[in-house]
Image (cartoon, rainbow, N blue to C red):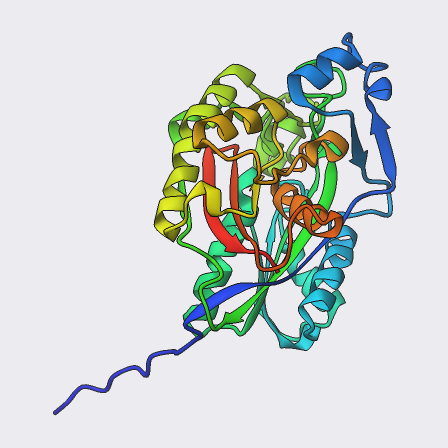
Length: 345
């Protein structure tokens, strides 16, 4: 007797980004304000990072609220309705509630019906990870359109007394609608991790050591050091890894897509540090004619939100255009990375 076989799911042959949107908090934190917290100078901050100012979220600008605002713009640009979205992926490290996932609240507020919704934690590579998952869902027949959001409130995890990180981080949200395409719109994702360096970017304390546990968990008489956790970074190892290893990953993404650097319409790296961006440009031998995202100057490092925010700005400013090929690469805590060539919406 022939064994029954599962009917295979069938999806689109290709996928692409159909729309992108961003949200930047109202409050601007210039370097002059940062200098009230740390012993430094505007020139030092600009030279070390390229940052002139960053945005920090106010009480009403929650992770969910910023995500909804960014997603609404992406949905409108894609020309679809929220009901057509078959999956919501939220990349963040700064949603401070362990469960439920913030993606479910965002999906409900947008009107996505019963679409599956979940969070991922891949730091500054989070948007790339989400893009890869969305591509697989669409081509695997598990969704027609997927909403990918990168969102952070890193101000909640910034130690204003830490001279090495206080000037770096910003808040914001970027979103993209990924859907079916007649032609390839997302190249092979080159992604991975290096857990041997998990300590070079990390949270200063785990939540279970930051706050006292109930006696039933902690045990009577056990004392704990109460201090709100913050992000810490060992800058030199991170810089070396980003400059030397990530340039190789970016080249692999170009090669996998069958694209050369001179065929790009934009280079959109994670907005980590202007010096890292400049070093990658040199390593890739990127022609001067290729526009490069430098959103970090006004936005700071927004981790998972940085690539879609920079993409939106380049499209709105006319630096890049719909249909252009863009090389994107994210890299950060983990250490993790993700790079791909995409067609701009």
